[in-house]
Image (cartoon, rainbow, N blue to C red):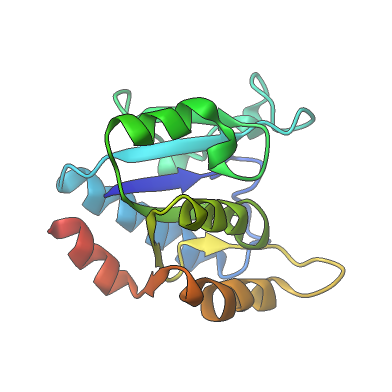
Length: 171
């Protein structure tokens, strides 16, 4: 299993996120448990060509989730982590078959990555409260979160409690 921590950048990790405090607490816990159990963490940053660009402080990973120097980092320019060739090739090289996916934003990049991972044959694990969304003109952040986590993803992924996720990381 590998843990994917995606788009947890300073420009996105803000208190306007749905259930912000729990999101931060839960992702930090997943990172902590993964490190303690030698489960590799793959960080992915979004470069949108505008605000989230290298050199801009908002592009950097939020301090709460700071990668260790030895942890892998990938950059994507599209929604899915699989749009990055190096990310795809790395997972193929280590013959990984299970991804625990966390990060931002639920109904955009996380949703795209979950579906892309499923289409490629990966077992996908999504711990509750480790992804989040913003309000949009069409629905509020809570609705976006619940729609993906409770309606869409259970058909293609294991949507688990934090306790279950921790147990998986400790195996």
